Image (cartoon, rainbow, N blue to C red; front, side):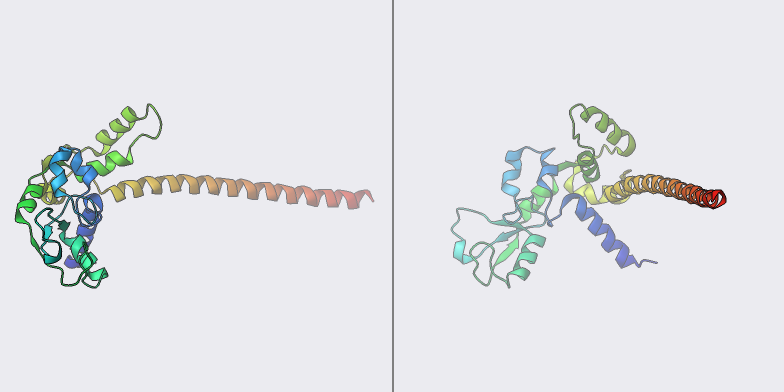
Length: 215
């Protein structure tokens, strides 16, 4: 049985898959309900997504007041660990940074749709002309979620009120169903092949017996 900590870690990892692969929020997802101009000042300068827990670099080496360098907290921590503490802007040591509370609040108040619905829409994205309407009907009827709310409410929605299953479970179920059909067809072919081999052996035996009888 999974411990409480293991369940929590799995939940966090699954939710990360939906909308912040790099630690920051998926810009394509957020752009569906927000004007691009509104998002330009919220971009992480490392991953080019929407900053999650925005940090502002304050190193004296590039603190000229002309540009604010924003980085998502997880992106920054990962980068500093991989670069032995070097600043991502000018590669100097002793990188200085602090929380940018203003940007964090702006991101927290962004309106977004359910990230699971976003992933499902991508999953049902048409590959041929004319498929769009049919795939949209499939997506909405089987897995639809009409949630639209603030970023800060997303986690509560996913944990308590979202009626969608995880996209991994949906895809896994479809793959498993397809594999079951393939396995069934394979077994039928194997059975047919075995039957044909048995028939061939019987006919060969009869031919040998008949040949001996006629000698």
